[in-house]
Length: 228
Image 1 (cartoon, rainbow, N blue to C red):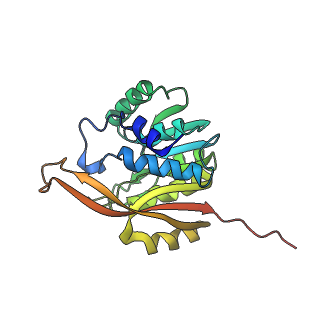
Image 2 (cartoon, rainbow, N blue to C red):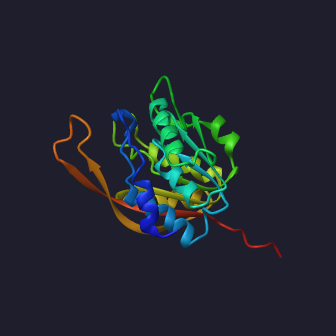
């Protein structure tokens, strides 16, 4: 499938009907999603015939794209029931519901005393190494109480994916994420420097749209040299 053809299909994906600011729900555009999945497949063969997990799937943009690009199975995980309802509608509209299953779950848990976020270890343990590829556009962690959530999402993706992870992150976090990836046993490569368009969606937005510099990262599991 050609890139423009994929982007055309994804143009029919419906975005959040009632976005929730605390969840940092900003839609992944068809333009971005098509390039992420097209690159993952055409350059690395990480989608076609692979088991894929989409973390923080929202309305299903990346899940739909993975299914269209030939994934054998896709699991989309999100905490928000409203977003998942829209995602299910999108799956049925684009005839990808046979490939994609949706799960309502939280990747993170909040400490009752400090409010600090940490990984949902039970969920991660159940899905550890169950997928070939993980795809995600995580929250950036800019809202109060969300500090570090982007790193936790990426850590969960590395635990669940046996081969590769594709993720969008603010370019300003690049050096830190490269170091964390190495600590998790992954090499981290910046595939592209992109602009993430944030439209005027919430009351506090003053501009019609804002472009945020983001990196498309590919994390690949390090292979150990054979023992001699």
